[in-house]
Amino acid sequence: MPYTLPADVDERPVVIDGAGTLGRRIAAVYAGGGSDVRIFDLAAQQREAARDYVEEHAAETQQTLGLHPARRGRVEICDDPQEAVAGAWMVIEAVPERIDIKTEVFGDLDRMAEPDAILCSNSSSIPTSQMIVKVEHPERVLNTHYQQPPELNSVELMSCGETDEGVIDALIEKIPQYGLVPFRVRRESDGFIFNRIWAAIKRECLMVVEEGVAPPEDVDAMWQIFTRAGIPPFRLMDRVGLDVVLAIEEHYAAVRDGIPEGPRKLLHEYIDQGRLGVKSGRGFYEYTD
Image (cartoon, rainbow, N blue to C red):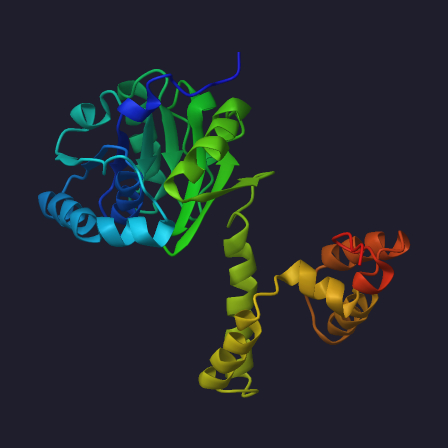
């Protein structure tokens, strides 16, 4: 039977395991959305700093995310992991980015957490499929990759390979309550969705500067111009024309080593269907005007 959220989900806490920079931001979001939050960390100073951060930024977080719950969630810090996870409906791991640490943490969480609790990793690079060797119930484990909330409020949800699809469906329905925007990662991907895109942008920015094509301030100034308009990549390609985009990609492939064929193959598939973008009425999107 597919997973469904427990009936008393709004009366149960969210637990953040790891009180670092991102852990405390995530805690602020859930507290701001009305859920009680428990923060666990081995270091007392980190725990206290995280609690102070949430208290100091709760109002700002609510304003940024447009949150208006009946009450603000309570924030509690714990030095005992068993005590921390007791009763929680969701536990979010935000410990250092080391596979050995995360493997141990998930083995412990699987053993200590409530049977219906969802176990999440906020790892930005390690798939949860690599963390579950000590987990007996992998169907409740997945990646929930937060960016930098509250301003960057997307969350990428990626299966560990054995995750109950009902868990992902439930989170996609639930977490918008906290001003978050969920995105389903449809197959395992190192870097998820956006970090892969950002990696390519970042790499080209560095190459432009290293090759002497432009200084950093010019790159940043042009970035501001292009992002100010708010036109997303696939909409922009449709405006340019997919046949033109393909011609540009073919040129890059001719003059640069290592350009992958996959993007050109995808463009060919659309062009062969007559989907050239805005000028043909169909591209990655449909255009009726």
